[in-house]
Image (tube, rainbow, N blue to C red):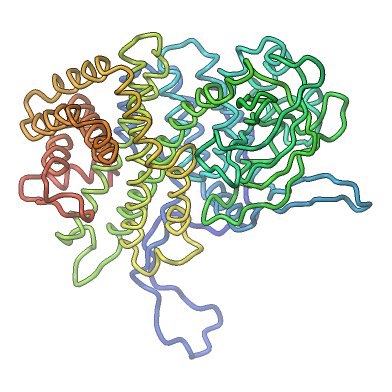
Length: 578
């Protein structure tokens, strides 16, 4: 991981260093002051998110990623600066704008961003977090990438959208010799080039995806966009695309992978650049930008193709398997990104509770608040441990057991961790009370951002169905996975009972089992998290997680814990050392 060589700042950014605010003296006191500002807590800033995360540092050491830690530490220090956090706040407030035409009426379809957007993308790219795990051969590379993504996602999530899609395109493009020869260097580059130019003129490039259409949503086979060959057609040939995409992520990417139907009606996957090879603008017309609930720093759009230039990747009729391979990687990113939001929500809530007083005590000392904070801490570490374990499976995917983790646990984790981020960012917001509900704070941004990972790259139901299809295709691999989890949890009776219940679900008739898909996926993820915590976390963390998550009384709301047998002080100190 290369050291940071850029330090974009936010001129005039306020000093938001951590501290409980004391009395504030009014400048030029006029005698109208009615009170002093006390017992108010600024949001946590000016810290390294790696330095305050012992569980993440342990996971990196366990993965053998020591060679990457210095670069990660440098990047984390930059991310934690107040100036960087001010950039993150600003680019979610000063959102992208669409310029359809230039001053003389020529169609340009250009999206303009605040300079902070480019600063964060440049920093991520220079930290070698786009292509590193797919190029580097050192052990621990995927864990190091996941850690970098996790650290960045705690500060700003929207910039991770083009980074995710670019990384996921690399394994697919490697199988296309002509395209890979032309794109290899700019895809693997650690330079940043934000210019809107033809591919041949770019030092580095970003790639996006275009699948969803109005009438189909997740049902890509319902797409109507057509691709007509220019000449004989076939793999690597030029096609003309006509149709639309209802969600077209990051339209300023230099190219997109797009699903369209070939003349025989079968879906194909096409490489569609912003500029044609002859240097003219491709006919991908941005109709409008989406006004999203969150993910506001990132542009999402609706587009129309009007005989747009595209190149067929793979064989005609194999478009969905091609794009699904890409989605396997993007789904991992959704898991890690949601774990990052859980972590930031926990850290902000715990910081606030340690400095804010109510009813004569710090919030963090109030028993019921402690139960909520411990529950958030358990959820956060379990999500992080699962994220890094999945990343290691991607590194070792030649092993059949690791491929089972990739194929089966990744969609289950995307379902569960992304859902938990939606719920628990709201719970963490409540810790801050009205201060959390203010729109210009980090908690509001996390709360608005969280649902995107649950929806993007396949909704919760789609993920659960994917899990069950994978089990049906290879039940023996699934049973072997359960055996491994059972071995790790052999001393934990509640978890073993849950494992037996999950095995028993396999006897359910298929037409009935589909309706139980969410229960199936939830059980699988909780067992995987419990096994990882039992293997790698202190006993007080694993004990608390297993005692709560396999208790039928747990789960209706966060904080429904019995702290009597739990070491709450140790759990909170591990989550964020005071």
